[in-house]
Length: 316
Image (tube, rainbow, N blue to C red; front, top):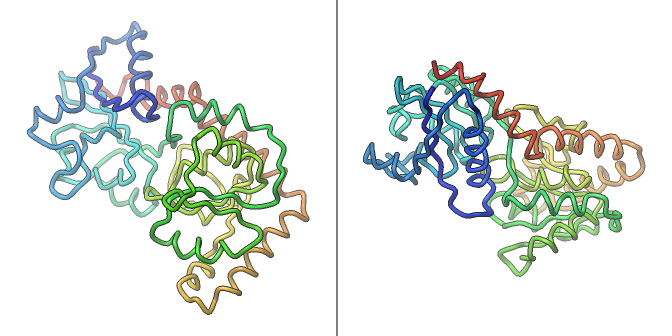
């Protein structure tokens, strides 16, 4: 069987592109198939489509996507790490040019999106990625650091709903908040060292409703505090087992009201203090790191990707 593999590495240390490139080399070593590489831009040119947006939809030819195509019958496997991956499964993105036998994604893959898009496509909930290929090395280097601070660490961009939480939680002694786009940017080695020395890591949904920070905290044995993670995954992240849901619907309903600030702070700080006073932390840390080992270590991710291809039966 001859398969065409399409991706765009984009940069040598970008996780998505480097994962795809490394996985292509893995496929080349498989004697049961023959593989040929075609750059994403070249594939897009065949259909006279763009690689960013088509018809106001994220393009199926995004560099966040991997194609594996059987050119004989057009049966196509697509893996996407695009923040708006489910939207790609809409006529007009370019996906209509392929006989898609399986579409793998996680970002923004809510149950509602799954129910809607699975009427036309076989969807496989996937695993998530770190930002850079060498981030996993920084995590392993810092995972055993002493937890010096009984605080929740956050270092990220400040946009959307985050702005309201940053404004409120910056007044709490339980939080150490740094804003990348307002003087808080630190180099990656420093970032991982700082995060690893905090007992807690705070996170809110990113654009894709999941974030690099989720994986970073789990890998570093830093207790992840966040709102409920509402995306489908190959192995779900479960509140109370892998992370603590510290931002509930009650708090989210009040966060836009400045008069509710003291109520929100008291409620969140009380939850953190309760965690410090119990043995629940060690259980969740252990389960979180084990989840990371199964879903985020590169060899495991390659094995999971292999399983998605079903011994290449999906291409027949």
